[in-house]
Length: 439
Image (cartoon, rainbow, N blue to C red; front, side, top):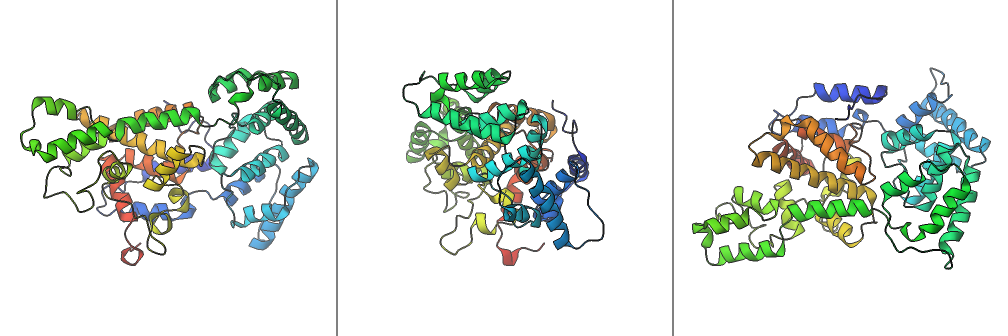
């Protein structure tokens, strides 16, 4: 079991201490936990994390200055680091980081700027990993991207950013050279990391890139496999749908045979869950929303997981993404029908969305399995964290982190007396329209 306190800095340690002191699950309407999740100061903002970071790397701050002066001095300090290393960046970009106006998202251009920052500050591999996972809140090196493989090699071997850009040009030439080798075999992220970890020379790295050129830019292979594995177990199949429809049509559900029961035990988890909640066959509990739903659809799966439909929003109407009472870091790419559809259509569209979907599905599977065994998932906090961390790290994703508001939500739920009900209650409360919400 990973000790969350191990190698934790002051901020992470304080977050963990506060986390274990919080006991909100007895609240009937979850207002208290929503208050906590809606206060950005309970989590480290990017500008706070960046300021704390530069203080640990040579920046000394005077007391008694106004905020505008603080921002200017912090910006000047970091901008000079970039200039010393001959790394280009807009001063306005750094100023926006410190003013709190911009939290860099995970798009390519912003990731490149964050890598530039790590080079400018002369960070080693461990420090770079910490900055990405605990301040930027994203994975560090996607070594299936040849640029980031080069960054990994250079930071590990104490090479500067100029050297890295030269190597990237050479690597791009190899990838664009049709006459170079192409193995047509899939190489996983973990294999690339293992095989390149001991490289110390440019020649070794270039030879590897040339020999495995077809494996680069095929991202998230393991993550997509894990996503599909969870989805296949949780979502109802077309065969499940046809079976349920037969039971409905002939009203066989009133006299289910032992053979039927055996089949139902092998249906998708949400179908088993829905039957237990009486929302498939019981006419008194079937809502207008679920009456004619395809039980093999993503829509139905998410309805069961959340125990209600997430507001989608049409034009200017209320939507979960825009109006739910949760921090933007939680709502961004929150697992919805729209997000699941995007992942299935293009797994590369958002690494954040894929990670969030895997956490949601892994959480639901864990809770369902514990309940099936007559156990309380909340008694198995360590097991959940270990299982989830194994899944995430195998996908090249960062483990659960208490300073990430989205991760915090699931960690809070799993330590409660009834994790799945707590999660559903929080999401339901967060979806209440603003005018009816009192925090």
